[in-house]
Image 1 (cartoon, rainbow, N blue to C red):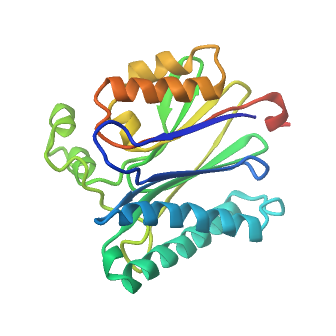
Image 2: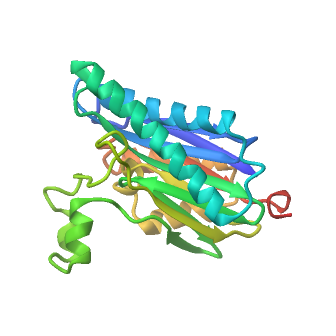
Length: 247
């Protein structure tokens, strides 16, 4: 598997409240986007990715085979991360109200599993087509699905950054879970809204279809996001599936 990753604070933010974690040996990849005042979003995102990584290290995945068992595993993993972020938000006044999005990808044989909470996204790029796997947990997406606003209105809506689910926001966490087959040369992109909010689908496709290393593609996507405004932190992990991954 070829892997690239990059995080950048963008042009408008004074600090970076995104986080990512790459566990190449375990084939687990995590991206998070923290929210909260006093830089506590930074604490929330880093706590979540560290807790997920620690859980994977202490609860080996290689014995888990069925889709149902993988889903149960990541539900427990997310509950653990949620508890830790919530605990820290309640213990320290400066962290009050902090939370974070999380999107996590796990590759096993010829299948990829995606878990997400919030509006960080997972995509699969295959044969020139970019498919968004996750669904944004946002107020605006709720309005869009209900037919109350148009897609054009959603793009410029005043509450477009308001998320409806987050890790650490409540005592329970409701994560979406997806499993889908992958094949050689598929590219998986997991990212925060600082990327897709600035870089349109056509530009994403143009970058992903290039014969470049995953690291070079990450660098190019960050540059695109900043050229287009860089209004938020930008974080991504990009994976290219090889023959070894689907044996």
